[in-house]
Image (cartoon, rainbow, N blue to C red; front, side):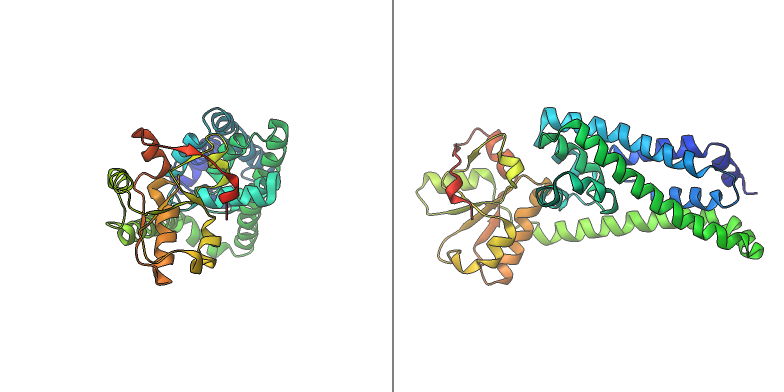
Length: 316
């Protein structure tokens, strides 16, 4: 038996628990390959299926509870910090916010199946003031579904190997290498997507100082607020004259966007992702005088520039 596999068998529950805690706390290290491996080993009764699931669910509940209480206390700051740790940071704030708004607590049942949503779902639940008993109930159910599905796939593979001993020997010698290659492929693909997106939007942003100078000079700038409702609930203010739009609504109603003046978009996503992506989509519609605000709402607020009370009637 390969040394690495023997080590995993003797420490499977502790390894799985620690690995999942690290992933759920924000490190980009996928746990599914480990769950698949553990599931395969349950076919030969080298590890216990029930203890594997108990380790996985316990790890999820501990890490998710930490993020829940941090989200409840620090709100959007923690949510954006978690997203910055994720390779899906370009979209996880907006996607998870929409997911919660649409499905409520039921979103926790599927959050761990969707890349980029698993880690950020817990702090958003806390930010939205979901009762902790409701959170822990649905989070436990979601963690069980997630870990059970991956483990059962591994179990199916293990049952196949039991009936094909020659395949078992070949897999045993190559399992470690295959696991490493899968991890490397995962990281390379995510990094490639992130860098491709950033290259596309680099140079298109407008600095807060430049926007302020334009406003001070009396220029007629059309400012669009793309924040999710969860973001402006704790701080119901906006940039001067900003109009609230949902990104999908903005693109669908592109004929309402003026073409004869500068358009500035802002959000609260890491890397100004929602603003940048919406700007690119508007340019595809022929609206070229559009730029994301560098640093978004938080960058403008940090500089102490003017903000005005939110008017809900401006929401599109």
